[in-house]
Length: 317
Image 1 (spheres, helix red, strand yellow):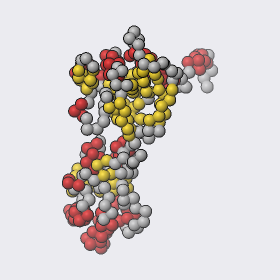
Image 2 (cartoon, rainbow, N blue to C red):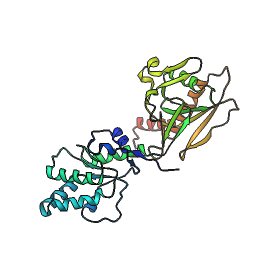
Image 3 (cartoon, helix red, strand yellow):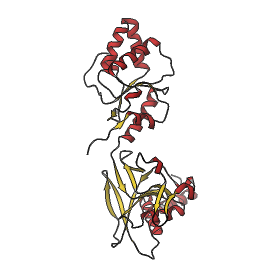
Image 4 (cartoon, rainbow, N blue to C red):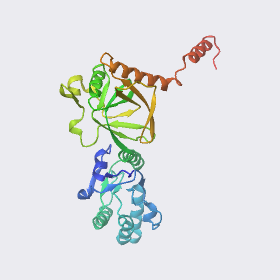
């Protein structure tokens, strides 16, 4: 499986905070491949080995203080030489963090001169370096997470993320519509994007590029249903963790199985369709069954009762 990539313009669009483009607006289609960031202090000082050129580079207060020191001691030429060590490696972008502290125009001029020479985007944010790196690393982990698309309907039932799958026309959307009518929440219909994010869990959402069709459902015999219009904005979720797969099938029901998505194992329930069976109720029960299994090791009622009795007798641990 090929490693995912993401365009720099998409990284900027998804970043949860101010991020200004100060050079390279026409260069934003370049690809970012690594979720990690780098502070190139050693490179600016002349140590060029083991440099991670695939990462977005951060020029924080420390790096800029070194460049200002270099400018005072040895002049603009040495600063340009140090910056060329960085920009010549065709890094995805360079970000000036903590930009609220005004930099001398002389240093900004040199940075932009070198950026133009090597055609490297330069971004700026007022966020302090540690906080920016934490936020950006999280967004890159999300955008570069392994992903796949699945044909089905994603709903949230009692806090459990349920992916309903089955053959076309089997009644997935109709079952989901009944669940939404009962107060559960809708995530995506027809095509569901699954990301392995955070690394040890799965996140389901509508696929990118289909924002205009978000929260629409296609119901056979009815047509297109816009869920927020009929059930309110509280009936939808932009994304939700995936916990359970439920397959609607005309075959025989089986015990709980396991299925794998992106290397994560999930329980898989199978519902046998029948004209007199309340399929939505069965799917609700399966979500509750999963929730009870998860909470079994957390909620221990007999232990709680004995602990309460000991407390009432004054035998506190």
